[in-house]
Structure formats: structure tokens, C-alpha cells
Image 1 (cartoon, one colour):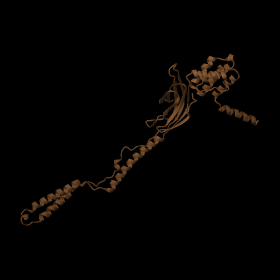
Image 2 (image 1 turned 135 degrees about the vertical axis):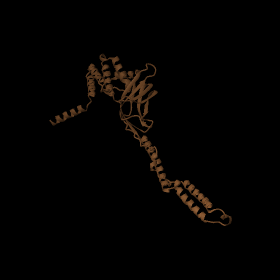
Image 3 (image 1 turned 90 degrees about the horizontal axis):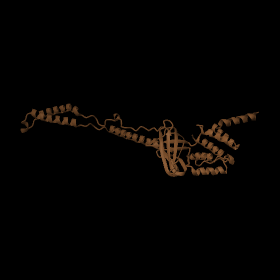
Image 4 (image 1 turned 180 degrees about the vertical axis):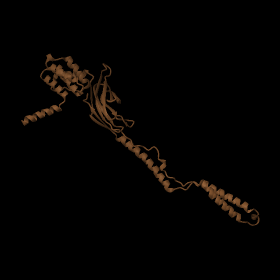
Length: 347
């Protein structure tokens, strides 16, 4: 009883983990193995109408359709249908290979014929890519059976803003690379994007093949440290004492008065004594007053060494804050990371 219960639990868990679309594809393959080719084709075609089907699931469904249209039984073969289905498959899956349970020698030959006559493209790339700084690049690899022009466009799913447009030409295989920063700012913001690659066949029929898949970007906001614009002058100290200026008037008057008093009390001999004391005192007093007043207004104040040193240190600290903020911002740009996750098997 317990064995039966465990078996039922295992089956239930397996069903819970299975993908419904994969289950439909398996039904189509089982029908093919049972030689029920029309049924296999009908079931496989349902996958192409399912919006949630990935490109990989659609490709497997097309393989079942091609195999059902070109089995080993000659009476059941539909060459034109099988060839058309294979060409449609190889347009965006140039390197596609039929699984052993679906193919045989004749179908393998038909696949190679379709590959020769179809402008086919294959897009591959590392699923998770991390770019660092302004020189960091991401890339996808394109391959076709003929040289052509390959154009890549990445748009945001919300708002359809174009993030990247790039291309390569004149080659059948190569990498389309693109940077994730422009003008030292991130191109991407965190969110979902659509990658569309269009391949143009040169000359001849000029076929155009378009393939697209999803992209998830993890690109945090790049915040910069504030760079000081100017120094706060209110924090600077006075480097000199105040000017004497008009405050020199009173001392000048006192000095002049003292000079007048002293000179008026002195008496010379001979001719020196002929002049009046008042006239001599006024001259001396006026000269002393003038000299004292001029000296007062000419005074620029006394230098305060400790304030001069403090202002110099403040200026150096300000310049250092600019250098530190600039260096920090450069570091943030240089070390900025964008993580891109490509869903190559997406819709």
C-alpha cells in the first residue's frame, strides 16, 4: 500500500514539474512513433498557436511537423510541405539538428537541402553577462549560411524606449557587441527588454530574417557624491585686526595738543627767541596732528598668524573635499556593474 502511495506521489510531483507545452510536444512525438503522422502534425501545429510557447518549443514542434510530413513510408511523404517547414525552422535556427527519434537518412538529406537553399540565421550568446564600467561590453553571436547585414535593436518592454542600436555587416558569422554605459551613465535601468536581431541577405532574393528574445537587466541607479561648488566664506577667520582709521582722530588731537603745549613752553636764544611761542606751538602741533592722523588711516591692522593658518587649512580641506568627491565618483563609474540575462529560448 505504501509503495503504491509513494509511486502515485512521485507521478504527481513529476506532472507538477512538467511544462504543459512540453507535454503537448511529447504527445505529438508519441503519435509520430505510432505512425499516426496526420495526428502528430495536428498536435504539433497547436504549439505554434500558443502565445506562451518559447522559441525552443516552437522549433521542436516544427521538427515534429517536418518529420510527420516526410516519414520513411513513401506513400505518406509530402516533400513540399516538409521542405517548407524545414526552411521556416532553419531561418531562425540555422544550426538546428533533428533528434534521432524523428529522423532518418532521407529526412537528414532534406534538412541539408533546406539549409543550402535558405537564408538561415542562428543567434547564440552567454545567458548571464556582467559588464563593468564605461568600457564594459555585452555581446550576442550571430551566424548565417551567407554573408549579410545584422542589425540589433534593444527596446524596453515598458514604454518601448530604444536602448541600443548596433550592427555588423559583410560577414556570415560574428559578434554584435554593445556597451552598457554612455557618457559615463548607465544605458539600462533595471527591468525587462526585448532584443530583436534582423538579418538582411545581400543581393539575390534579399531575404530578411528576424529573431527576438527577452532580456532582463539589473542596473541599479548610479548615485554620485556631491562635489562642493564653493567654500563657505562665513567660516573664514579675520586675518588682521581692525584698521585704526577714524579712531586716530582723538589720538592725533591729543598728540597735537601735547606738542603745542610743549613747544609753547620752550624759548630759544637770540633769533630763535624772536618768534612768538604761540606761532611755534601751532606749527609743531599741526605737524604732529597730521603725522598721527595719517599714520592712523594708513594702518592696515595687525596680521593674526593663527587665523591665517586656520584659513589656509580650511582652504586645503575644501580643495581636498573636491578631489575626494571627484575621485569617489570616478571610482563609482569605473566599478559600476550591469548584469544582463538573455532568454535565448524566449518567445
